[in-house]
Length: 79
Image (cartoon, rainbow, N blue to C red):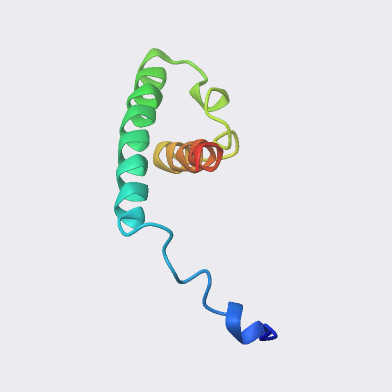
């Protein structure tokens, strides 16, 4: 029986689980960013506190940084 070493596991993270997983990640991010950006812009135009609606966006200064943070938080729950 072969004994496993750390060298056998060193490139586990570099291997993809599925052939198109980076494109799928980008597609989910783009759709999520578009939807949450529209919500944030609508909240900004109406003068509402939209940052409390997006988890992770509470401490962000800019609109895009808040939306990006919200999308990453959203994606961490679904992936």
